[in-house]
Length: 86
Image (cartoon, rainbow, N blue to C red; front, side):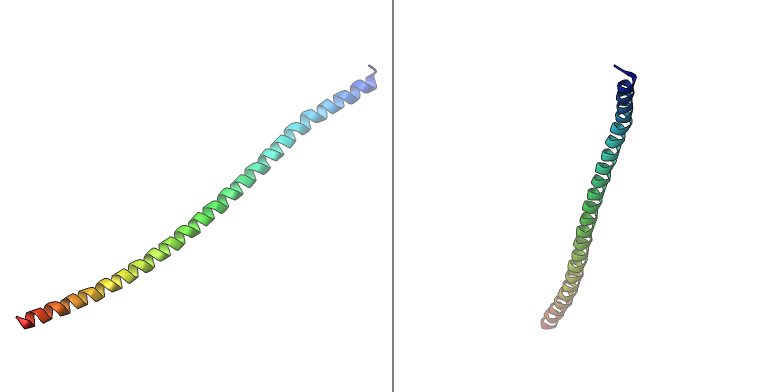
C-alpha cells in the first residue's frame, strides 16, 4: 500500500474513534433527557390528580360536617320534645 492510502485509512479510523463515541454519548444524553421529561410530565399529572382528589375530599368533609351539625340540632330538638312529653 502506498503512503497516501495508509494516511487516508488512518485518518478515517481516527475520525471513527472520535465520532462513534461522541455519537453514542449524544444519543444517550438525548434519550436520557427525553426519559426525564416524560417522567416529569407523569409526576405533574399525578400531582394534579392528587390535588383534585384532595379538593374533593375537603368538599366532602365540609358537607359531612354540615350534615352532622344539622343532625345534632335535630337530635337535640327531638330530645327536648321527649323531655317535655314526659
